[in-house]
Length: 425
Image (cartoon, rainbow, N blue to C red; front, side, top):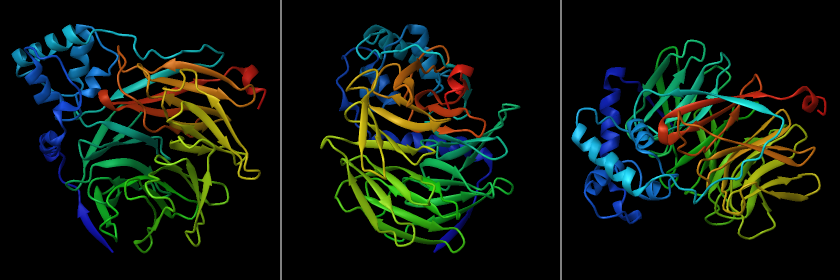
């Protein structure tokens, strides 16, 4: 059922990243019209290798200094200063700062601070950080075909190259501190032993199950995962290597985020249909819960201590709550409105945290269910703002891990909740 691979020596890491970089040229340069002028060809050559030009035209816009800082976080052109200057000249002229997608920032009583780490390999699109029991932070470098580890005490980092074509979408940690990743490109689940560097790879049992997406362990050590475009949910038993897959009842539901409730039932968000899915962990039978508005699409969800299912209504700019006991659904408009596209979500100490990925810059938002009030902050990427949060997860000490993929940053959000707020718990 599974094949075994050993990690390559780290000296090959840059070669792997470069190969991934070059293989990405299939992304169309015509995804957004850019002004025809000197520098465009270089922009298309270097920028479109990893993302469409729409990322440029829909950006916040930057000063010359910030465009240079942003591009340097993606690709090293120090050996070609003329090309670098031509690109920066073009971007500075045609994409200065703008306010087309300015978020609504709301003040409040909670104080937070951001601790940032810039990961080593450029252009890897670092994402989905998670904390291990020893306090280390792991992330997936999707475009760099790697997973990485941060020691937050010493700030040391290590990157582990993965088998070719893995393109990891996410990472999660098991009870033995093994690090598991979803091979989103080559239809695999992988397990890394950090002590030995050995990687064990589990292939999907069905050739149509092409895209393992997000994974989570239940209390029994079983790994549950989504396959978004394959429209399936999977279960992997690490003891036997056995994988079982089930298909969602509605075509193109696009299962995305996944969490486990206190009774061991997986819950899944539908990114292509107005539904949540509850999974029977024994039989893998699926119950589809229809959400009220037909245009609802849910990226991710989380579960609070009372068993309430909190979700982001990404397509309608709303924060939602589903009560499994009563079937009641409540939704609140997010601060920046219907086009805010809330994406990641996490429950921390009873408060609901999410981001508004449709805004520039991407805000981090806190919702207090007791007062039904919001507070929000702009998420930095160094001295400028770039990128969106696609997944966020709490730490054991009550903080939050997020990321900014566009600038290769992993970020810890340190939360300082005032005593007056804590007394309401």
